[in-house]
Amino acid sequence: MKRFLPILLAALAVTGCIDQKAWIQKFAPKDDDQFARQFLDSVRESRYDDAKRMLDPAVTAQAGARD
Image (cartoon, rainbow, N blue to C red; front, side):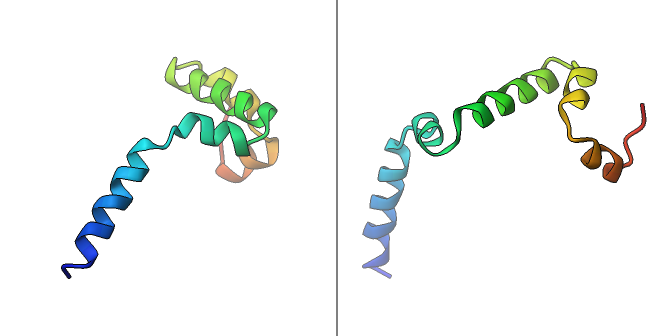
């Protein structure tokens, strides 16, 4: 247990230093990142019709969404 605590503290310190936005931009395609941000902004701003139009029709049908 005494060996585990320093490793855990070091892992937490390193995790806190990672720039999550830069990490995501490094691995996610730019178009996908932009689409996701636009979709989330629409939902946050209660523009549900805009967000619904962005969904794949198959996903909307499977979820049972109504017009």
